[in-house]
Length: 599
Image (cartoon, rainbow, N blue to C red; front, side):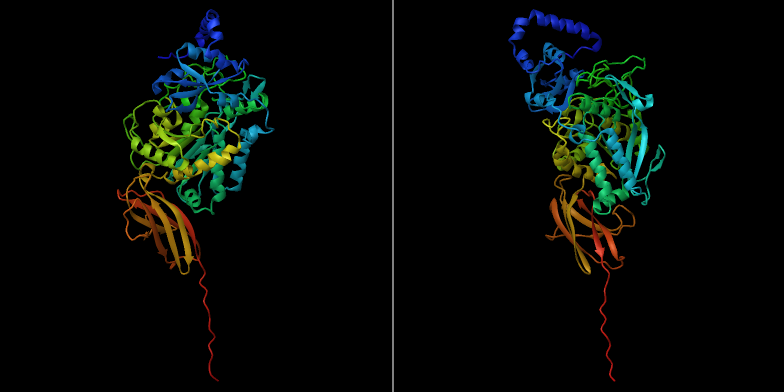
């Protein structure tokens, strides 16, 4: 079995052993395939991208000291990692089968300065925050910009970053999007948030600093909600009746360090993963002196290993300079504490205290955390192989989300690699809500693809998945079992409006459709909603996909625009997600015929 890399306290001894090994075996080494593998990257600052092959996923527990990327080729049984020269030798010395990935390595080590802005168009933290302020000012009735905490460096008054740079730190900002004129919104009073009754979809990004595409996806989702409100009927009802919270960068200090690479390091952002806390035990001595940061070795705490649920050694490191260092204690970091407090203030705890306790079917709320990369939809648990108590619901939602973005849906631990103290495990483990990690982008795109990739590929793939997650936030474990509504249209031939739609249960409950309804202006879950029955166009409800139609009589409706809600139900009795459309009730115009009388 491969052995784990030594702790930092032992690396001096280990390095001496490795160098002695090299000296004794110099003749063998000079002609070995391993030497040839490294020969293309003899620059001492170079990083080699390697494939590390394994027998079982549990073997990957032994790689916690390495920067193992969010990619696991389950067919060929290898993961990708970035290693320096010593790390490369240590892997070989420990018995791992290691091969270089020349294509990814060539892209990674290309240091040509290509851009005058941040890596071709990505937003810096300052630009992200400025755009949030602009959006908030433009839509004051729909948005609320909330400072829910402070980053580590802001709390410290600033951080001295190796390389003669000072990191001032940042407020932690979340945007709430909801129509406050519709009852049930949370109450925001300064930095205090009091839970409302509206269902909550919580979207967060960039807990790993180097994953710079994820803030862009989150910002596009915000722009969609605010710009299309009143124009797109689905966006409109979501903002009216749900609360959507978006945190574009959960780790702004780390993002700033990544940006520093673009300015200082020949045009490429640093692959800094963690926050900027370089004194985890508060002894006044920096944990790490490595500069510039390498993928393997840099300061900070991995915030996605620092959560208070499941914090521990699985898939995380005790060594402060390792990429997966989980901190000195659970939820030790201000960023983690603030995030957990915000989510807990918005969504009730709906799961019992035991690991075996399942959340109820009518649990409300859903969370998605955006990462890169691997084109995966991951669900708990990440720190154990056995299924979570709500595995059927988690899998059903994950599988459904994957039908929209085309990714693979699977349990995090067995599918990617073991993790502990992760956000999705905390959200499900503590609150019982379905929580998912989207690993966005394929392995060729990596953490920092060309900026155009966001607009051309990653946003179009994930937009429908995020909208579906928002739609089912009221009771996700229940609603996912029902059919979806698509191709909803209304043709108006006064005085009637004809409704047509497709009701599809083929990728949810996989049952025949038995009913489809419409309601006007009042969503179907409200007690005073009046249902209008829609009919199967082939005359009978008996298929998993049904075309439906119906007529709306505008009698009693005010002149002007109205919203039509449509929902379907399958043979198991499960109602699916709602879709909506606008229609107009026209002004009735009368023709007057003059009365002619005799003389």
